[in-house]
Figure 1 (cartoon, rainbow, N blue to C red):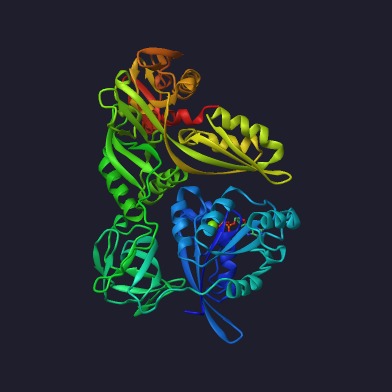
Figure 2 (tube, rainbow, N blue to C red; figure 1 turned 120 degrees about the horizontal axis):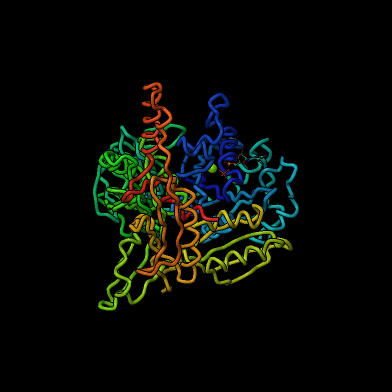
Length: 597
Ligand code: GDP
Ligand code: MG
């Protein structure tokens, strides 16, 4: 145990975690130079292509120094706020953290939020100044920021480069000398914390855990403390580039277990594994059910594909327990699912995986947050509204509450003004403003979560010319003056386009949506009025002029096969169209609200 080191790598997105992990894997001979590919730990295609880590990964490295053999367990974590719960569990499995800061960018929002998570778990922090090879690196300035932030000595900061390999030996030496060996009682009852699980189509769920106390033997009957379910440890082992089966995994170590579990829902991150016969008394602290924050409808483009979509979503859920969904129907879109996601990135990932891994073409509706609604008749009865169309009749509503977040923005001081203006426009309330250095400012806001679901992030990047980073944490619900904005096409309400918006924004938003829809919906044989309304009151209107031309007309008397081709082309085009009453609506129109200027 005294020669084990468990550590994670934390950083703001793109500061070079995965690349530096690659260098450590190479330096310890865990992966040969021949097998090396970039971001070796990012195993999903999607992770590689997007260059982001979605799941946590663990890997064991052997390292020898001064005749002593060490076992280093590295846990690579996803840095994105959508997955912060996974980050926090991974952190809890470690004694130390490499805090990577890009020397050309400096400290960013997720550097700070991940650092706080690490400090809360009493981890030893090894600060690393990465990307020193870049001409734009500002080592003195960024070292100052780091020293200021964590209160270390400037000489503790290790200059490094994941690209050139600079600093890798120093980092390995620091891991051995500065990070404490795991504690825990090797002879006590088994207490292991699950920090991640992956789905394997042949083996079922493979759970990753860190053993806090005791040991786990192959074949043992085990108990999940939080769910109370028991299983058999069919296969256990440690994680190298491929899983290595073992007969026993001991205190302080990081390992995997396969126990015939087929569904990710059964193994949640934060779960405690113990033995059935001699269970530990307490669970590892910090188990929570992760709650979806953003909801949207997902519908098959082809209405006949509903069952196939259900099958695909179920399969995806086996793999990703944070995805929730239930069937819903929409007058405009037919049968589909209302899905809950951890955040906007998670939603994009699910959509992309449906298309890639399951070949599904889907229509996603405008995302919304989850609202609490109280009616006058039953003011203590909280109704959870995950779809604006499900809102009770507005005349019966007493209050609607919406989720709020604490938003933290870090930017260059020259952009503070623009960032403030944006946040206020997004109904934000300034809470705090701290100068991290002379020209870097951290601004904290309280803001409705709904506002970041729309175009907040893109706007923030554009007003700060890319020099702002952003992170947020939910802080509970608060009553708001919200109204349901409906959209009518040819006098028919399109349920999939309804949104709950703040009363002060309704008029402007209604106008913009009508304009955008006018742009997106092709002209048809008749005139189409587009209206935005609150209840029975129309607040904006646009009209799509009628079209009179028949596209096949010019083929009359001509080549029949050409005519057929044209018709087929039209049909192809129609696949992504939805009939709403008499109006054909292209798929993009259902996301029009997201694309307003
Ligand atoms: P992560 O999001 O923190 O895992 O970051 P990645 O390891 O995926 O790196 C983000 C980008 O920065 C990639 O394009 C890397 O090639 C690049 N990168 C990472 N480390 C270095 C470095 O030390 N020097 C330079 N020049 N580029 C780097
Ligand atoms: Mg990465």
